[in-house]
Image (cartoon, rainbow, N blue to C red; front, side, top):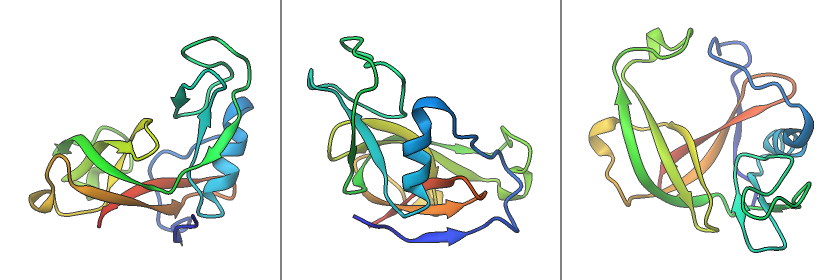
Amino acid sequence: MSAPVEDRRESWDGPVPVPTGATVPFWAATLEGTLRYQACDCGNRQLYPRAVCTDCGAEDPPFEDSEGVGTIYTYTVCHVPGEPGFADRTPYVVGAIELDEGPRLLALLDADPDDLEIGAAVSVTFWRVSDEAAMPVFVPE
Protein backbone atom coordinates (compact mmCIF):
# COMPACT_ATOMS: atom_id res chain seq x y z
CA MET A 1 0.00 0.00 0.00
CA SER A 2 1.22 3.48 -0.79
CA ALA A 3 -0.07 6.33 1.35
CA PRO A 4 0.16 10.07 0.71
CA VAL A 5 3.45 11.80 1.58
CA GLU A 6 3.04 15.50 2.35
CA ASP A 7 6.23 17.57 2.16
CA ARG A 8 6.60 19.48 5.44
CA ARG A 9 10.35 20.09 5.30
CA GLU A 10 9.93 23.87 5.14
CA SER A 11 7.46 24.14 8.03
CA TRP A 12 8.47 21.27 10.36
CA ASP A 13 10.34 22.40 13.48
CA GLY A 14 9.84 19.27 15.59
CA PRO A 15 12.22 16.35 16.04
CA VAL A 16 13.68 14.79 12.90
CA PRO A 17 14.44 11.05 12.69
CA VAL A 18 18.00 10.06 11.86
CA PRO A 19 18.05 6.72 10.02
CA THR A 20 20.79 4.40 11.30
CA GLY A 21 21.43 0.67 11.35
CA ALA A 22 18.25 -1.42 11.38
CA THR A 23 16.03 1.65 10.88
CA VAL A 24 17.38 2.62 7.43
CA PRO A 25 14.95 0.40 5.39
CA PHE A 26 12.02 1.60 7.52
CA TRP A 27 12.73 5.31 6.97
CA ALA A 28 13.55 4.83 3.27
CA ALA A 29 10.12 3.22 2.78
CA THR A 30 8.37 6.15 4.48
CA LEU A 31 9.61 8.47 1.75
CA GLU A 32 7.69 6.29 -0.73
CA GLY A 33 4.51 6.27 1.40
CA THR A 34 5.03 2.75 2.75
CA LEU A 35 4.87 1.71 6.40
CA ARG A 36 7.05 -1.33 7.14
CA TYR A 37 7.34 -3.61 10.15
CA GLN A 38 9.64 -6.51 10.96
CA ALA A 39 8.18 -10.03 10.72
CA CYS A 40 10.52 -12.59 12.27
CA ASP A 41 10.49 -16.27 11.26
CA CYS A 42 9.41 -17.06 14.85
CA GLY A 43 6.10 -15.26 14.22
CA ASN A 44 6.89 -12.07 16.14
CA ARG A 45 5.98 -8.80 14.44
CA GLN A 46 7.61 -5.64 15.72
CA LEU A 47 7.72 -1.93 15.09
CA TYR A 48 9.91 0.20 15.36
CA PRO A 49 12.78 -1.70 13.73
CA ARG A 50 15.52 -3.28 15.81
CA ALA A 51 18.66 -5.25 15.00
CA VAL A 52 17.22 -8.31 16.79
CA CYS A 53 13.82 -9.90 17.26
CA THR A 54 12.40 -8.89 20.63
CA ASP A 55 10.93 -12.39 21.06
CA CYS A 56 13.57 -14.93 19.95
CA GLY A 57 16.70 -12.78 19.52
CA ALA A 58 17.20 -13.58 15.82
CA GLU A 59 19.37 -11.00 14.08
CA ASP A 60 18.01 -8.69 11.38
CA PRO A 61 14.36 -9.79 11.20
CA PRO A 62 13.03 -9.23 7.66
CA PHE A 63 10.68 -6.39 6.75
CA GLU A 64 7.16 -6.64 5.39
CA ASP A 65 4.93 -3.85 4.08
CA SER A 66 1.93 -2.92 6.19
CA GLU A 67 -1.46 -2.09 4.72
CA GLY A 68 -1.19 1.07 6.85
CA VAL A 69 -4.51 0.61 8.63
CA GLY A 70 -5.36 -0.20 12.21
CA THR A 71 -7.18 1.03 15.28
CA ILE A 72 -6.52 3.42 18.12
CA TYR A 73 -5.40 1.26 21.06
CA THR A 74 -5.12 4.31 23.33
CA TYR A 75 -4.29 7.99 22.99
CA THR A 76 -3.51 11.11 24.95
CA VAL A 77 -4.12 14.78 24.25
CA CYS A 78 -0.99 16.82 24.92
CA HIS A 79 -1.68 20.33 26.18
CA VAL A 80 1.93 21.01 27.16
CA PRO A 81 4.51 20.58 24.39
CA GLY A 82 6.77 17.62 25.08
CA GLU A 83 9.32 18.52 22.43
CA PRO A 84 10.72 21.73 20.97
CA GLY A 85 8.66 22.72 17.96
CA PHE A 86 5.35 21.51 19.37
CA ALA A 87 4.37 24.65 21.29
CA ASP A 88 2.27 26.02 18.41
CA ARG A 89 0.65 22.60 17.84
CA THR A 90 -1.00 22.20 21.26
CA PRO A 91 -3.26 20.52 21.84
CA TYR A 92 -1.98 17.62 19.76
CA VAL A 93 -2.75 13.92 19.98
CA VAL A 94 -0.34 11.02 20.35
CA GLY A 95 -1.78 7.54 20.01
CA ALA A 96 -0.76 3.93 20.30
CA ILE A 97 -1.91 2.50 16.99
CA GLU A 98 -2.50 -1.22 16.64
CA LEU A 99 -1.88 -2.16 13.03
CA ASP A 100 -4.06 -4.82 11.43
CA GLU A 101 -0.90 -6.92 11.08
CA GLY A 102 -0.39 -6.89 14.86
CA PRO A 103 2.40 -4.55 15.92
CA ARG A 104 1.70 -1.31 17.75
CA LEU A 105 3.46 2.00 17.33
CA LEU A 106 3.25 5.44 18.87
CA ALA A 107 2.39 8.14 16.35
CA LEU A 108 0.77 11.52 15.96
CA LEU A 109 -2.96 11.48 15.23
CA ASP A 110 -3.89 14.29 12.85
CA ALA A 111 -7.43 14.89 14.09
CA ASP A 112 -9.53 16.97 16.43
CA PRO A 113 -9.23 15.31 19.87
CA ASP A 114 -13.03 15.54 20.31
CA ASP A 115 -13.51 13.34 17.22
CA LEU A 116 -11.38 10.42 18.47
CA GLU A 117 -12.26 7.31 20.42
CA ILE A 118 -10.43 4.14 21.40
CA GLY A 119 -11.05 1.39 18.86
CA ALA A 120 -11.64 3.83 15.98
CA ALA A 121 -10.24 2.89 12.57
CA VAL A 122 -7.26 4.92 11.34
CA SER A 123 -4.97 4.89 8.33
CA VAL A 124 -1.44 6.12 7.82
CA THR A 125 -0.27 9.16 5.96
CA PHE A 126 3.24 10.62 6.01
CA TRP A 127 4.77 14.01 6.71
CA ARG A 128 8.14 14.34 5.02
CA VAL A 129 10.32 16.16 7.55
CA SER A 130 13.79 15.71 6.01
CA ASP A 131 15.54 14.36 2.94
CA GLU A 132 15.89 11.02 4.76
CA ALA A 133 12.60 10.45 6.57
CA ALA A 134 8.85 10.97 6.62
CA MET A 135 6.93 10.67 9.89
CA PRO A 136 4.03 8.21 9.94
CA VAL A 137 0.92 10.12 11.06
CA PHE A 138 -2.50 8.54 11.42
CA VAL A 139 -5.89 9.96 10.45
CA PRO A 140 -9.40 8.66 11.18
CA GLU A 141 -11.02 6.68 8.37
